[in-house]
Amino acid sequence: MRFGSRDPVIRGFRFLGDTVGYQVTLRGARAEHFLQKLIHIVLPRTKDFRGVSPKAIDEMGNITLGLKEHIVFPETSDEDSKDIFGLAVTITTTAKNAKEAESFLRHLGLPLQEK
Image 1: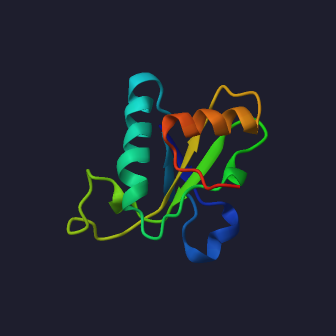
Image 2: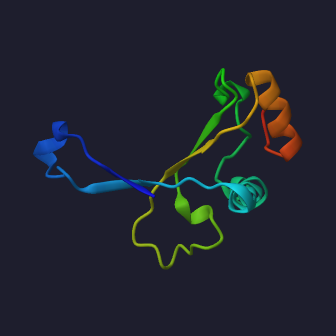
């Protein structure tokens, strides 16, 4: 797990050196479990979700999704949360290009919009 901190540019806001984010890498069974939960539970619970744009897939076959609220995960409850924060999820595939990745992600069940 890595911690992220603010750049020195934001010195006026007194965030210098404060932890503002975490980076976690999941592999194997944990990654598969998280991905299935993301596709089948979290994304359908997201407000105004209309599918992921295929344009979000980069030329190397990876995709990054941004979620505005962490409370869409079933492990969290909005009553217990004082603050609501967003997160970014990057899915790294072994696909050689965006077309292969799109086919793979559709096969997994990721709701991609039609082009």
